[in-house]
Length: 386
Ligand SMILES: [Zn+2]
Image 1 (cartoon, protein in one colour):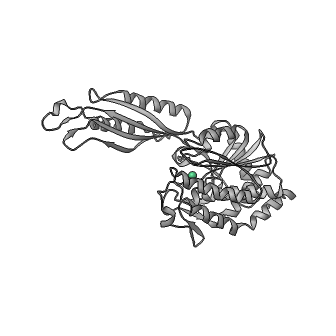
Image 2: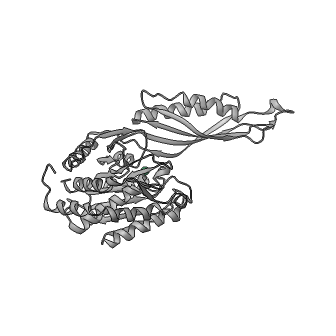
Image 3: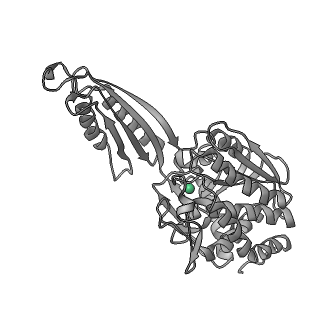
């Protein structure tokens, strides 16, 4: 270690150093507990495992209930305060029900596999152990709040207000999404808007009454090419129509059609510019007498590389260097809850979780040997956040 650790932080780091086996045990439990974003009982069961671990380490836990999605779980070390340090992570995964039965947790050649192993059950385990370490030995320069959310993979419809309220009370946020395959953390993320567009036309028999029909599918096709033309790769703005449906039968002029649209952007003015174009496309009928509506189904704020975020990253990177693991910040097009915490003005650094890759695929993996070091770096970054 380059800079000598103070006695409090030394105990925390040493204790974490001996926890890899226990971390893997908890990780196995979490990965083998099914919990897609819409599976409330599953996401709550993942929360129950985490809560049992935390309460076993005398950490106060509170459930913020939700009727539709999983409940949010909030753990506090050191009492309420307006200058808490927040450790954040989501418990839901993108996988369909039954995935852990088909592909249970296993380790092969230094890598762990299973649904959500890196994104982000390993990050949840890391946060839980860092909370436990400070609960055991003290040494945190302020209260720690662990927020374990339930619906990040679908844009955090239920947890966004909880995340934002918690972040407003915090002075720093560490989001434990998986570290990049390079070992780097994330200092910038695009914002994203998920939308649904509905087009209405008029049904008619395509043989007998063709000219009476108004084709919603033709209108959708024309709108899709216009939407995709908004993409400007040099600005980092992209529009993707990822889902389409429509029509009644092959021999009916289509009375309806719909699609789902994903807009990604880097800055807020870019969002406004792209949204104005999208709204114009929705309002303009290419096939006369069609009509269209647009609805925003979910939204992520961008993680902007602001001076405050940069300072927190530099603090984190210095701690990582002191533990012999140089780290850099990367930009990614993927969205995360860190955009919400940064959006309310709280310094945020993202992807401080254990290192992994191929998220959202069956090949998703976690580098087992990164569990302990990333926990130690996070703990040091917390301890030195004076
Ligand atoms: Zn994630």
